[in-house]
Image (cartoon, rainbow, N blue to C red):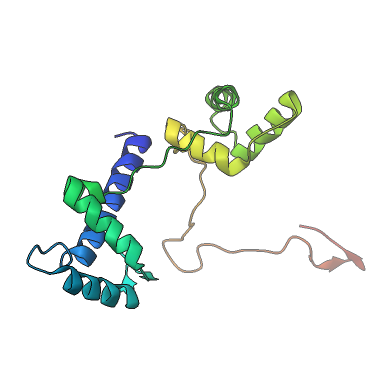
Length: 181
């Protein structure tokens, strides 16, 4: 699963949670047995209360919003309560992002900050390093490099007094002069 598909799935789940929240607020208002007066009183009562949205924030919903959600539900059912996805166009030119991806593929060890400096010197402008990092994640250009790890780690002796450490800067004085080991 690509990161963009995963992001789309998360956005759809969040939109569904919002629709469930909206339905939870208007479920009493859509009862056909209520008179207009009872429905209006109930809507005013709901509008006066604080509600916890699906993401844990305290929100107040106006009467007009409750009426609008009720109209939407009656016209289109539950799906009409799902918020429309935002139609955001990318501000960063695709050519710049393609060049950044090519630079990353050329040398996977390059960081976003290094690629940002290269783009700034060659094109005079560069997106932020965070924009580049987000693009690299979406393009699948991040992750561990297949380089062998250098040998660093714990060094233990099997028995006591098997390892000794000395200080090379302060050796004994021989002939009145300081010596180095």
